[in-house]
Length: 82
Image 1 (tube, one colour):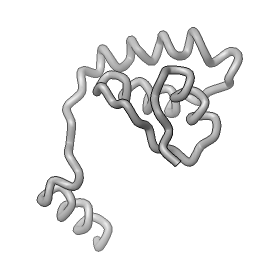
Image 2: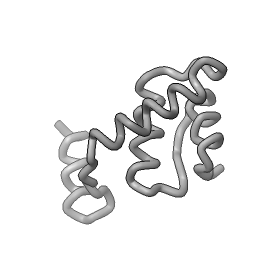
Image 3: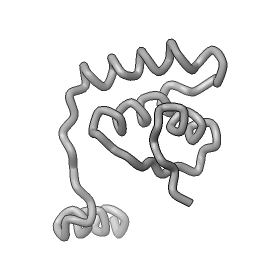
């Protein structure tokens, strides 16, 4: 319950923003990413969906601790901060 309270506090303070997404567009981007990168990169479906969502929302940076997901995000032009 403490974790949920922290998330709710972050939403209330605008430190965390819930962004609506057009899921049809996200899936379309994910299909393109999968077709272009998965056979050579072996990306998992949730990694592809996360990167597709970031692209759909117009993100310029992408935070990840997953090396494979990082490679996909970089291949799509997203900046990976240190």
